[in-house]
Amino acid sequence: MERSQEIRVDRSVLTVTTLQQADADDRAYWLSKTPVERLEALELMRQVVYQYDPLTTRLQRILTGPEPLGS
Image 1 (cartoon, rainbow, N blue to C red):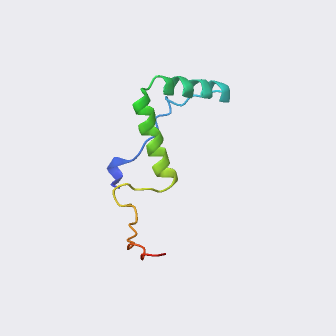
Image 2 (image 1 turned 60 degrees about the vertical axis):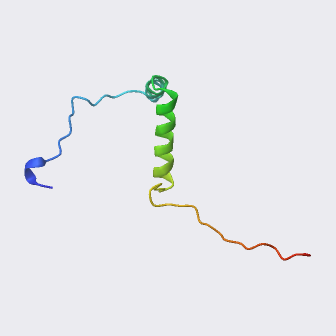
Image 3 (image 1 turned 180 degrees about the horizontal axis):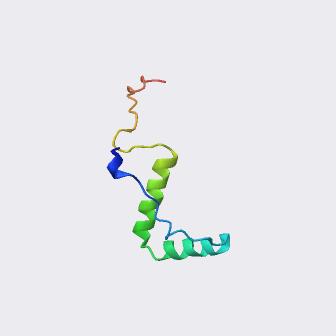
């Protein structure tokens, strides 16, 4: 990273709140989203937690032959 592009923290956005208020704010945020947006967020979190990359991970194929007659 170049020195001219330093990352700065905007301290005017920082707020201190209780856990109960944070939970209420989180609930209000997610209730404001559509069901599709909620599912997309859930899928993204699943991919992060399980380190799953849908572009490179594929189902393993197992080839089997027919069972012999009379078994």
